[in-house]
Amino acid sequence: MTLTVARVAVLVAALLSGAPRSAVSARAPVRSLPAAGAPAPDITERHHYMLSARVRPLVVFWIGRSNVGDAIVTRAVTPHEVRYSLLIGSDPDRAPRRINRWGYIEERIRGNAATVVGLMTESDEESVEEAETNLRRERSGVHTFKVIHAAIDAEQSRSAVTAVGAPADYSFRQVRAVLALAGDGTAGPSRVVRLPRGTRPGFLSALAEIVHAQAESARAGTLHAGTPLTYVYHGKFYELRATSVQFKPTFEVNSSRYARVVCAQFATKSLADGEETRFALSYAIDGRLAEVPLTISYQPRWWMQINLALADDVGSPLMRALEQ
Image (cartoon, rainbow, N blue to C red):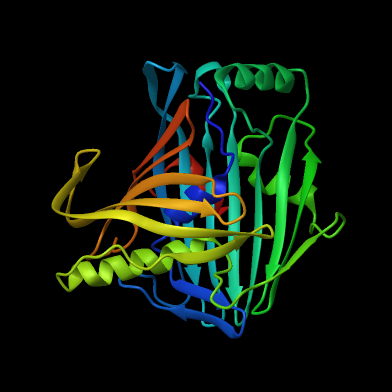
């Protein structure tokens, strides 16, 4: 079973949709709006998700495994900056055949500027067979990560992607070591695009706005899907829209019951070629976890589905590692 994090931006944004609102337009500064349930200034908040996955080696059936990886979402607010980060991937100690697929992304917004740093294991499998081939290659000693650095302001987005070779098969527990290898991303060629008015600086900001609008309407008793938004990612433009929303008085996740929950379906569309990616998430609209996703479902490939469920446990080894 392969747990790729290709196209990780979609999943990143879904997990971070409960973060404070922010947006960049071509002629407007970044704005940060406090969300219901968002942390107060100078507060750092982390959430842990348990990762499960299913693969479909043949078209007719699925094979699933639970608790084969983790995701950690961090959101922090100071008077001058908002920071989001996501670490997600399989755990070689738990995943079948010690599969190691993971990614990390961090977004910082300060004033009218935003920066994004992300990395992922270099993996773009289109089938189970390609995944097996990549696994064999990695066992031979080839360990490559793709790293993106982006700087976004009210007028333009400048980004670059580089390939970084690692001396070992690092797992998500070594995220800081890989980031150190990557440097600042200024060595490679960059991609620069002008931002049309209203463009959000990334999927994080766009989804956060839509989720916030949904939650506000749900709290008012008039739930609606929200307005589609355009965002930029590595010099390309995408549209994000909610395709359906449903209110549930109660919702259960891993034996925990939550009240007043919205279950939403989303689609992102490349404005260059029309390709769509779909995902789903659920979130509470009240209380400490307001607008923080409770579950995520994402199918990046026809043969693979990734599911995450909130499993906050501050004492987990991974949470402790990130705090060091």
